[in-house]
Image: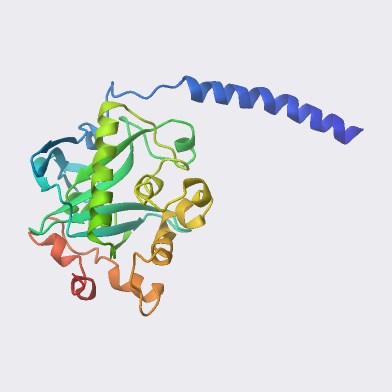
Length: 279
């Protein structure tokens, strides 16, 4: 009898609390309006012109030693509609227990690289927190930028452990994921969206472009929930070559954090010899 009363009290407390949270979430509407943090002010803009995709606002920032922005720079670039010559998977470990940020880098035949990084679009004064990301506190943004900016910030400035894997994809798969990411960019430009730590984050947003991905089946896969283990998932899917095992491969593709992103051949220097030899 006493236990049943306790259950009734708990339910009576949690039910209205859950209702209030649900109403709060459903009434929040995403927007492009208002002020944004310096790194998130400009959304990329994409236009198809013949056999090229013209992209405005490709981010190419430079940073101070403390991680603050030293120079805001944007580029306007054109990329072939046939897609990249190679796709690289990046994992930036910012904490233990598999806490990491995943991103893709598209390598083109002319030697240029374009990084796509799905991130929480922060307003001035906001700091990213995974729990808050469950409750529509952050907007979603696909940052398109240079490797010197997006990778260099993490490896050289923040000193995160960054791994950069060459993915084993055929031409149709490379083009498919490239076009899919560009469509995501255009979709957000046309209609703002919320970032969600669980349902719509840096990893699930990219996996959406895998035609064999089953969202609900993989939702509770720890390798998806904790992107630091996403290379294990990629290995299982056949996207990575690891003749000597994943542990050795991780050591081979870890970026040297001492390489300065201001160097002219930053992209070339962060790729180890073994990965580069597979091109």
